[in-house]
Each structure stands twice: as structure tokens, then as C-alpha cells.
Amino acid sequence: MLPFQTIQLSDKPIFDRFLEGNPYRSSDLSFTNLYCWQEKFQTQFVVQDDWLFIRFQDKKGRNSYLKPIGKSKLADAINILEKDSVACNCLFQIRGLTQQMCEEVEAAMPGKFTYSLNRSVSDYLYTSEKLIHLSGKKLQSKRNHINRFKNENQWEYRSLTGNPEALAECKKMLAEWMEKDAREERDPSLVFDDIATNTMLDHFDYFGLRGGMICADNKLVAFSLGSPLTADTFDVHVEKAFTDTHGAYSIINQQLIEHEAAEFTYINREDDLGMDSLRKAKLSYQPDILLEKFVARKKEI
Image (cartoon, rainbow, N blue to C red; front, side, top):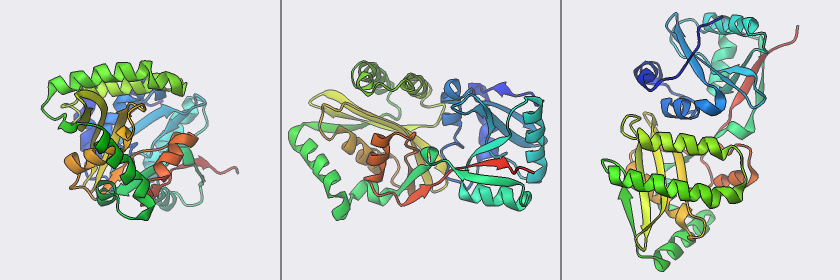
């Protein structure tokens, strides 16, 4: 059995070394996400034979693995994980595989796995140009929401970078949001969302985050956090807004990218958790790439 261990903040340089230059654009391969959501997924890691192995639990509490990260022979790394699953007496499964990852696994171990789509964890990617300008007839409603917000409010955008006072304001807004908007959503997983968001705000600089907030009539009504994911992709980790302020979500979506991530080609707005409302909202922005994720399991002999 591999000596997996809980992720610590001090482990960031290890993850940075392995994840630097990764081409996948997957939000799973972010130290910020792995660390901040580990309480929900019981995420652990170990480095062995110059491979980064990541193990977590799926929604049924079963051990699962991400694709090993490293540059040696992939088949050897997968065999190591399979032995760990046998020692844990659990079904061997590799989750969060993009199409590119599936092709790499199949090339390394032809015919050994079946691959099934897990739509609820597939990532939504958009060009930064689209999210900034919202051009075209299909995004007219988004422009309308923003224009109404601007007409109804005296507003301003403030960057969170180098602004500890603003980060403290966001923590206060998050507490209020959890009491009001989150209670209406009745989603039990939001307790983990609250933990993750507070952790990001507490360690904003250490994670290398970028962020912004929207104030309307001198009140904070929305904020968002993200970070560079690959050379051409920025990952939006958090977006919070008060729903009783019309257009608050629309404008923080647009303003964050314009001010903090315009140099990136793509914006990964992560998955929809299988929630119909969230899926509808993310599809309404007309994604340029739906980064599908698959689960690999051994074929029955």
C-alpha cells in the first residue's frame, strides 16, 4: 500500500514542480483546488518513483485516483496504483480523465480499460474574448443584465490583489451569503464550498490567486477568485454574488476576466456538479470547449 498523506500548505512546491507545463486545462490539476477541497474528497498524495499520485474518494466513498503525473513510463505508474487499490480492497478506477488523458492511458495499456463519460464533472471553457465582450445575438441577454446593473447602481470594480482589507470584506460577504443565498439553495455540499472559499481568501497570496469585487452603492455585492491553470488557461475557482442585486453575477463574471485574466486565451469555469440550474447557467454562456471527463475501469476478463 502506498504511503498516501494529507496535503499540507507546505506541499505546494511539490505540486508546482509536477504540474508545471501540464497541457490538460483540467481544473482537477490545480493545487488550490486539491488543497481547498480535500475535506470533501479526502484527497491525499504521495510521490514515488518520480510520479505524483493523487487519491481521493468519489461520492460513494470509494477510493479513486487521478491520472499519475510524471514523465516516466505511464504503464508502470498505473500498475503501482492498481496494486494500491488491491491492498485497499477497492475497485480500481481512474477518474477525471480528459480525452487526451484517455488516449495516453490507452496508448500505454491498450485494451485494458473501459472509459465512461462523467458529465457532471466536465469543465466549461470559454475564450476570454467572449466573456469580456459578450458579442453576438446569443449573448444579448448577458449584455442586458450588465447594462441594467450599471444603470441601476453607482458601482465600481476593485482588484483583490495586494488588498488585504478587501479580502476581509469578502470573508464578511461570504458569511452573509451563506446565511442568505446559500440557505435558499439547500445544497449540503455548500458547507465544503464555504470551507474552500474561506481557505482561498485566507491564503490568497500563497496560492497565487487573482481576484476582484464589485461594489454597488458602496456595498460589496459580488466577488470572484481564480488563478492561472496552464500557459493559456485561467481557472475561475469561486464566484459569489447576491441574487437580490440584479446582474451582480453577470458583471463580476465579465469584470474579473477583463481586469485579471485578459491575457489568457481560455477561461475554465469548472464543472456544474450535475446541478440543472448550474448547467443551464454555464451553457447559457455558449462554451467554446466542453472539457469532458471520463472514468477508466479495468475491463472484465
